[in-house]
Image (cartoon, rainbow, N blue to C red; front, top):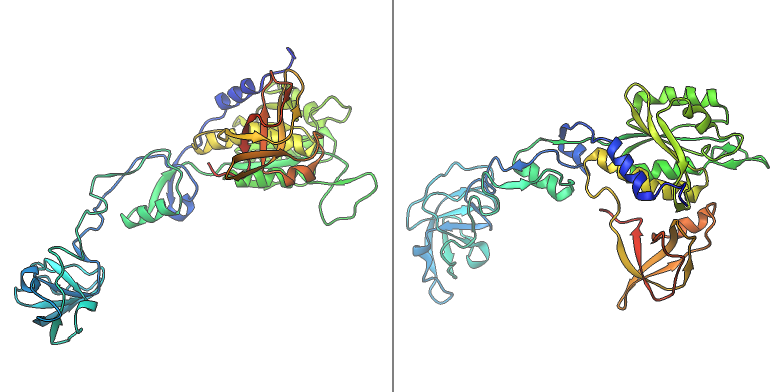
Length: 409
């Protein structure tokens, strides 16, 4: 297998070629799922002022410390404070102020008595239970202090992060954008789903598979119509799409056949490498850059399983690098194999499996055969077992390396 490029070598070449996209400020909702390109320091404290955690009465703790059911304390109610309505800024000892949850506590208040411990009086309140000193008061900075490091560069923003950013007043945040990925399928035999199918034609599943995979990876995916087996038509279609592409993915036309138009159209550029990779499925690959902006292009094999495994192995890390997301590749898990598998010497094999966890641990069961056309088996699988290049067989019961295809990371 000396003439085949090892998988890690091609991955390394891709990551050295692809650069992170420039970052810019983005509105919070647009930043969901993106990676921070800045450290975020709290510009204010949370809470930003002392406030009540209960609906009740603001009091001086010393005035109510003796309150019980048998010996209640009675205090005049001298005002009311609602959330966002803080007209009353101070209170005198020996009085009570009705206060709502989230409202700022007035100066002189050292505890809040919940409604449930009172008769909910309007002019005068009867208090039958004493709070502890400071009870039911949320102090300024209890959650976050001004100047605290909130989120570090590289954090992938989820709903909880966006809530925190909004709570400290950030309307925008610097992130790397979603890459625009253009997906083209080549082949004169291809037809769009929903159209009539001739006896010598097939429906184009690859472009949907790859565009959906790009979208699932966080990119903006543009699925282009089918391109027939004609080099000029392919070149024209590709040129038209470069204006909106940060990355291009093609499927088909990269083997050694007479109608492999992708290789024929791009090889003359001198910027795209074509060759074999020591993997199964997915041996024929192509990668390079095209156009004035040196847009990365991946030319994947046409068989659907080969195309998908190639996307997972090579395109996914490139998309994540563009977005500033780490790690670039899926984390490797460990699981026990339920049935034996064989593998060709010198190649890294990716076996479709069903991953499951029970009280005995994590297990993987092979799904279907090795054929790179078996899309039904691929759809039934939820993981890939990675068989190393130096292994030709793995027995049932052995621990194996697993990539979970539906895992967020």
